[in-house]
Image (cartoon, rainbow, N blue to C red):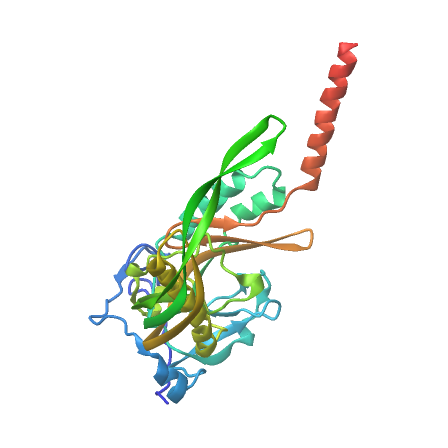
Length: 360
């Protein structure tokens, strides 16, 4: 078992003593009180791909190399870590108040890398406000929530990434389209039409290649899924993990173990293999009778990816809004105001009635 290390202590401003926070879009810490900035020293080594077999067989699926202080939300179950001290904080997913006294210390597999936030909270809030302002029949409470400076939280989401060499042998069929002319009877007499048919031929072969960075959301739960439309990050911007990048943001601990993440990645690798096989078979369409897939030299990383989240309750239902902290892409579900729609319908009916009366 690797030695447990304590998280790095909070960084104080050299000018006024306040806590420094990460400045999105840079590699600097900034003091929000006096404006002092300090560079985050970059690691001279690149982040490491860890041997999967070692962690699964020797160290174990619950292995860790560092301890982390976590606040557990009793309402939705999210495990959240805040790098700096605070007086009050709400859960980023369900807005349930989190209590500092409920802090627990747990172990985790140390992140190997992260994509730092590129958008600061003001830019993210403007994106959110613009989106809310474009919505028809949005409740006034939603528009007020968009103006709430505490309503938007920056969150680092944990992901597993898996790499491997993939080899697969297969048997199947190649389908090539061809067309025949058929004659048929209609109300207008005999007609002809082109009918598409498929010629099937046996196919077999082998495919192989390197599968790079299969992403598995390590905190996946049905009520907290990151929308696919924003779940795209440029992993070329990954930097070696440094806890200073977490300052000013919330970090969620993975709830999907390395073992379960690996199981999910195998299915993703299988989908990749089938796409390679279809391309190898060629033709217009393909049938895969069987495929024998093997993975070798498997490695993994635990990485953190940036998202802004705003949660909102309306008429007893919970709504979430997500902004990719790197690209600015937004996705969200929205409530409708019954009364705004109701009065609009009344207004339209009144106009129609007025026109009818005037026409008489």
